[in-house]
Image (tube, rainbow, N blue to C red; front, side, top):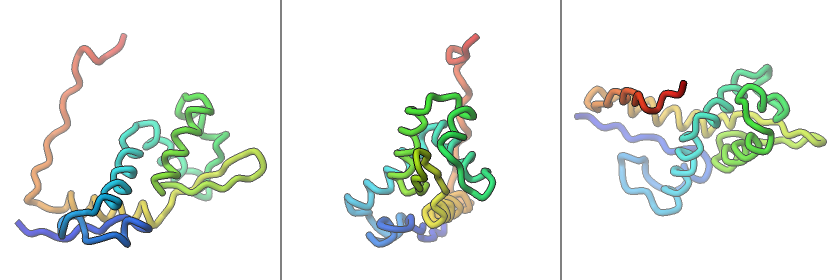
Length: 138
């Protein structure tokens, strides 16, 4: 099995230590990286990221993000705060509206890390589990 070092995320994470496969993360770096993965661990936040990335000019107003995800504005604002805190998006306040953009450095670094992981032919990735019949709603 060949191993390639995984790039860390941009910003604070990149300044912390060695790549994931090249050594142990310190506590602060592990927390910052976990914050990014927690932010991506919710389907609504992943959808919000995709809506912003697909928006004209790569920017979306909070007012345009509530209807597509079917959530109330305070809930969307909470999700957006978590994405900002994880450095996945940037926020620009214009009057009463907040506008969001994808943070390209963080997303590119995260994408690079995932490409390295998934490109390794020696890594066996399990198939996703089948949904439980009990989890389906009528």
